Amino acid sequence: MDKIGLFGGSFNPIHHGHLIIARALAERANLSRVIFLPCGEPPHKDETQLIDGVHRGEMVKLAIAGEPLFAFSDYDLIRPGPTFTIETVRHFRSEFGKDVELHWIIGADTLRELPTWRLVTDLVDECRVVTAVRSGWTSDVWEELAQTFSFDQIARLREDVYETPLIDISATDIRHRMAADRSIRYLVPQGVAGYIRDNDLYLT
Image 1 (cartoon, helix red, strand yellow):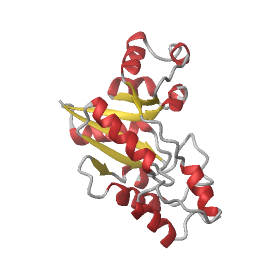
Image 2 (image 1 turned 180 degrees about the vertical axis):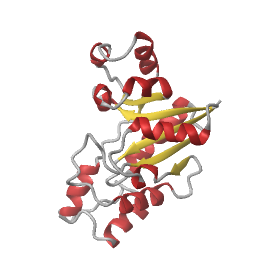
Image 3 (image 1 turned 90 degrees about the horizontal axis):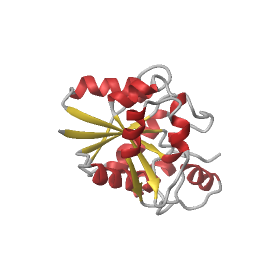
Image 4 (image 1 turned 90 degrees about the vertical axis):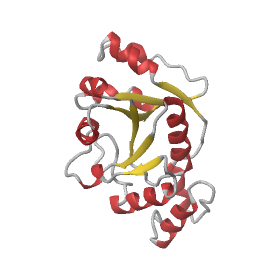
């Protein structure tokens, strides 16, 4: 069965950490492709620092150019209203059909937030929720999640936890460095760095 990863996020901006984690998860979970999905209106994040989706989408395309493992979709950017994961997953289910196994990629910090997501128990049944964690990660989150998910759902969530490389790069730090007129070289792909500077992004 073909396995496709769906990697949603603000990508504000996309950086090497995103790319390294996406590749690591693709290798660990045997994914044939990872689709990057910049969000439109994230329901769980502060939008005050979120630049226009056109810019974020262009930076993702520059970051993954020439990499056959990665693909880009603007589905979450162009659809109206808040970006709810269950709706995105159902869109790609209708696009790819039932013979493709969909994997939604999250970080370890997001596990605890899952009970607040729309129709999250349906989401866990309709796709694999793949969690990227750092080496040696431990958490008591499973006891909390047991109040929302069934025993079988918890088992599936635990099965899809994968260790990924420790990459200490954050989009917040990149934005701060741009505002302070400091270099972002080695933090983002060269094409992304050029796009940020050419479009005067993150200067304040």
